[in-house]
Length: 76
Image 1 (cartoon, rainbow, N blue to C red):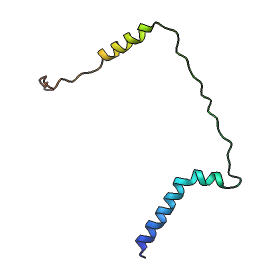
Image 2: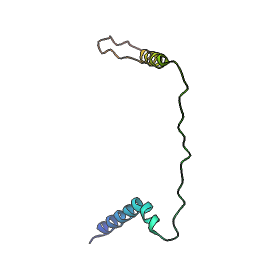
Image 3: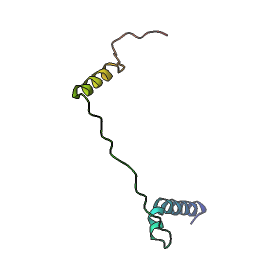
């Protein structure tokens, strides 16, 4: 086996261990960490006019830039 083959084999093993380290860490004795629980909460939207959302979407769509391939190009 050539030096290049050995280097590639070692690099593959290192990459495999690095990718699987979280799973290996759980199996090692004394390496367990307490589980973190997310402190997420559901945020309820404020009560509003149902048509307000539709107006906001229409306003945002009207403000989107458009592209017309038939329009003549302006020279800058």
